[in-house]
Image (tube, rainbow over all chains, first blue to last red; front, side):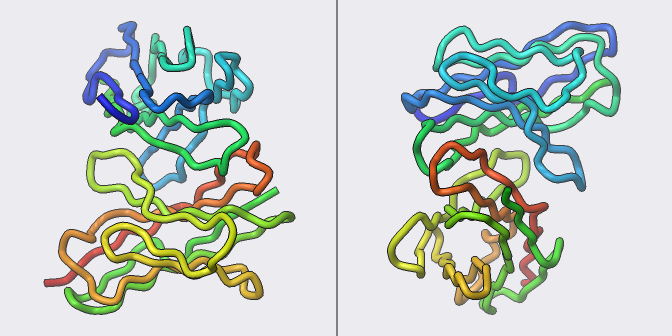
Length: 113
Length: 114
């Protein structure tokens, strides 16, 4: 596989469930990101990992928990979500020290019932 | 600090007509500029980018953009719209020292009228 792959593409969960989103990049990049895209809102940066260390966390609620076990994999663990958390969650990667260009996955569409 | 303003959240053009999507940026340092496209239920895909050198940048699918420093603009154009161009388009900026994260505009949804 090439590029950035995200699984699952679609996820429906109840407010009491625990689930995880997975992202894998095959580009040899050293930074990975989670973005939230909600209808009629700008793209929202949630977390940034550079060299597997979290370097940015934009005041995201604790019900979202990221994990970056290595430079190729990124997870977003979800628990006790709210209906307003329903959105498209996009993973991206980049090379630190480069142009800042991001390479995105196709996203995981999350619906919280 | 950087910011991006995309004028017009929705743009409609007829098939075969010129596409013009506007983007103005604010940056305290020379910027890197990007246009991304997002098709329904998909992630963002890079359309084109300006880093240094030639100010007219050509991208995929016949799109191009021109960096105009005096106008702080990076408008996206395509001479002849195709139905497959219907999507949402995002302009983005980063600082040219490579460590600044991308700042995105709010997006412009392009509709193509048959």
